[in-house]
Amino acid sequence: MLKAENIRFDCQAEVVLRGVSLIINPKDRIGLVGPNGVGKTTLLKVIAGELKPISGSIVNNGLLIGYLPQEITEHQELIAKDYVKKLTGLFDLEKEYDFLTTRAQEQSVERLGVVLEKLDHLGYYTFDGRFEKVLRKVGLSPVVLDQIVSTLSGGEKRRLLLAAILISQFDVVLLDEPTNDLDLEGIKILEGFLLRSKSTFLIVTHDRHLLRTITNKIADISPNGDSIDIYSLGYDEYVASREANRVSVAKEYEEYQEEKKRLKEVQKKLSKTSGRIAGNKASSDSEKLGRNAAREKASTKYGASAKAVSTRILKLNEPQKPQNVIDLSFAFMGTNGLVSETIVSLESATVVYDNKTIGPFNLRLKRRDKIVITGSNGSGKTTLNNLLGGLVKPTSGLVNQGSGVVTGIIDQAKTLPAPKKTLLENAKILAQVGGIDEPELRAILSKFNFGEDRMEQLASSLSPGERTRLLLVAIVARKTNFLLLDEPTNHLDIPAMEELEQAILSYPETIVLVTHDRELIEKINPTHMLEVKNGRLK
Image (cartoon, rainbow, N blue to C red; front, side, top):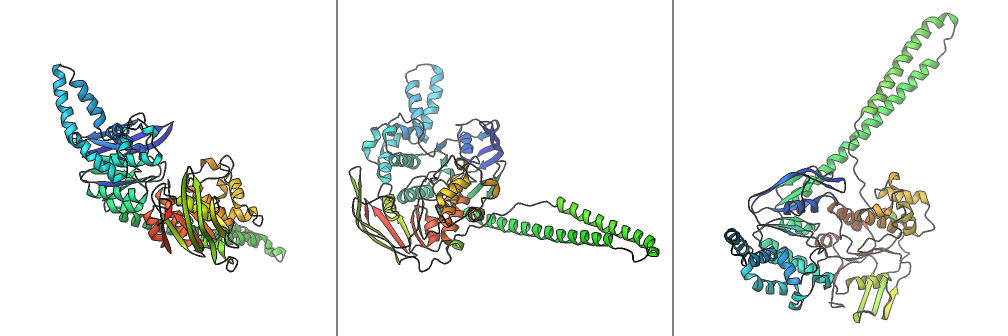
């Protein structure tokens, strides 16, 4: 149906894709996964014709392909309605139709027929009626239609992109992180559309629940961008295969370590034996000639054997090293009894900004509560989270924090205090604890897969997942007992999300989590679910 063959793409002298191939068949619902930066967006743009590969080709048998980007960066000078037409392929065809109908040349007639056929195929004649329904579904006012896209808010732009997805009628739809910044309601609307859609699609998303629900294949780009593995049974097969590979890698590395240890012990014994023999002295002159020769021969033999074993050790192929499993629980031994039963309470607490009132909130968090806060974008979730963490002061009402509470925070942006400083320097700033020395901090960094070779790396070069891990280091170093997480899985790839998930699951104290990640909500098994609607707890 649609084929990408041996696609190679370079970006600023750096190779992103190294000859990957992918076949998209009719009715395929493919989830494209892989680490951040591996080239997923690049491959979508190449298939869509927005980027030209250095080598390789796209085989397309006349299919209409739609590409829906992560965010609105181009064509922001258009009004909202024309922007949606642009994304759905209708805008350019409409302009071409207007141009062709003003010409009376014979060659224009044939092209006009092609344009009319494409307009019909993409639903041009029913667009206005369908668009009104879609606008209501995504919660956009009809007033938005005539507004310039650049003047819209971030939330309105995101819902405009969602509207374009819902109204598109392409043969193949390429979706790049369509859930980014969508609230739970928006994600469910998108999921319902994709489940009902008859279009073939290729989707890049880190929403694991969405991948599990809507895809029938997973295409996994290798970390160095040179191949794509296909899992034809969908996301669960992909996860099972990865887990089997993880176990295999761990076993292979353990066997390597054991063999290396065994050989080193053999080498040590042989070297020791060789040295002992060489050091033995004959008891009399008459014994010297014969025994010295035998002693020298034996010493040489054991020495040669020791050298041969040393060579074997050097020739051992070191397999891939498995990553540490991140576990927060080790850092919280002995905190029992130091923290009050009430972690924080809100009494008619409100925050007023931009003539908007959030609250009043009345809420009491007890020790070891696991709270999940949901709600639509702009409803006041982050404000409530910040009140609980003491990041903002209430305009009215009270915020009472319990005794012995030490708060750890991961915000949406995974903000580090000094991006131009090293990883170790940021860890020291974040830890803010006089009682922890540098060797102990380095040991904690190691547990979070930051080895000695990473300590001097600039923090600005860290990926979102690595920034999250560094913030978790600080949470451990400070021995926090109250964890506040605001959309922590945003912009993380799946491996980083799973790392964070394991860390949260092993955290033994109080957690407040603002998230739309349904997989994470299910795994954390919250004690309470809170929904914020129009600035109030529902």
